[in-house]
Amino acid sequence: MRKVLVLNTTYEPLNVCSVRRALVLLFKGKAEVLEQSGMAFRSERATYELPHVIRLHSYVHVPRRSGASRISRRAVFARDRHHCQYCGSERHLTVDHVVPRSKGGSDTWDNLVTSCALCNRKKADRPPHQAGLRLARKPRPPQPASFVFLHVDQIHESWRPYLSYAS
Image 1 (spheres, helix red, strand yellow):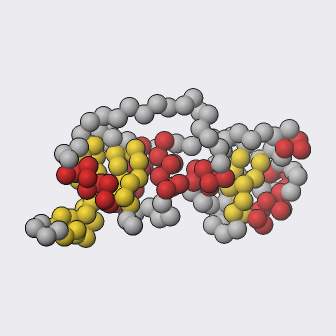
Image 2: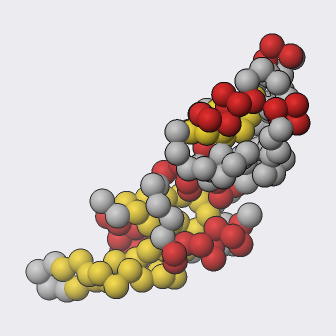
Image 3: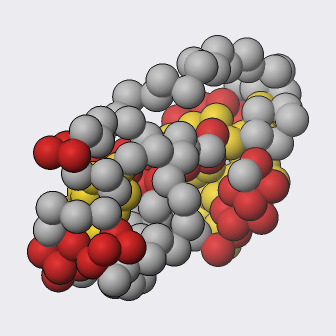
């Protein structure tokens, strides 16, 4: 089933939902279409173009946790956009502790990065600089739009302007 990006009234990404749920929001007058897919849904009496991006008419308050978002392997991969933070590879991904746990490193957003198995083995039980590795970017808690990468395998081109606007 296709996915639709749902934006708040402020154009902040809120959710990813099914096309069916998006159509229900549109029919009830709770949302408007910002990007069309070019595909159609046909009923007995009408044809409706399927959306790629919708925006809600009413503002939805989203409580933000103070940087203590739930850490999971999948969430770390999504934050790092499924790329090794040492070499940029997209294959054989693992989670690596920048400061190894044996050296006092913790399971926090600023100490966990996505690493390919090769770089993880090369780094072993050392800090990156001792292994001759360099981080592409400093690890940090995920941006609000990072959750989108958790729910879909591929980001549609029409979503990119709305995701970059939020980051």
